[in-house]
Length: 311
Image (tube, rainbow, N blue to C red; front, side, top):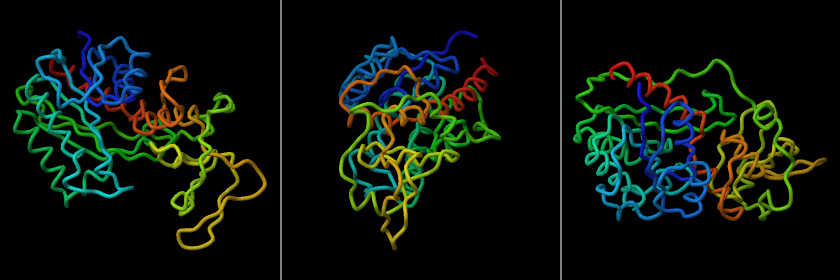
């Protein structure tokens, strides 16, 4: 079978795309609003990367490809912050729909946070499914946890897939969870000790201290967030101690620090040699906003199997 090509919207640093490329796809065009993320993407990919507002990009300027990926912004849907139906970031998926409708790829894949499923009592996910369906696609979605796919991290993401209706794919099975868990001990093996400027040293806020932020070497990490000062603790830190409701303190007898950006990147299963562009805050943001590459790869393998069975 020929190599399948992909277009990537809201690509970020490329976690979704790296996973798909590992499964045999090829990214030829990508877009994001964040200039640092676009430059990071260019450093590992030879795709054409267009930095700018997707709402101002004509579908006529986007090449035809076999699939379209879209990690559309999720902050408005997140369970960790206020969720508003009228948040402008919540309607960016409409540009994803617009481009899919115009380009008619074989398939598309979107991803978002768990909160998407309950936003507006389910109205948002229903609207997304209906709009893609109206474009002529059979649409499937499922909540997957990255820790079930070789990622040392508790990270739940909604994966939305759609196949062009004329392909006749009336059922899609998402990848089955693996029968093993990768721990932080394994994920961080070989990651060098951080140097100056590799770890966020901002003060710890009351929000940070409102719950446990430490998991051990033989566990998976908490979700890696996009905000540098909220990044979880390095597993070698002393255990945190609960003082009361929504109040914790750091343990004694060792070094307490956040994960370095290199450690966060490794947990998110980025390649060890990836070069991130921007300052430390920007790098943490790119890592925290990404789909873990191994989770993306698991989805990509299943998608490719499905397409190969009919093409």
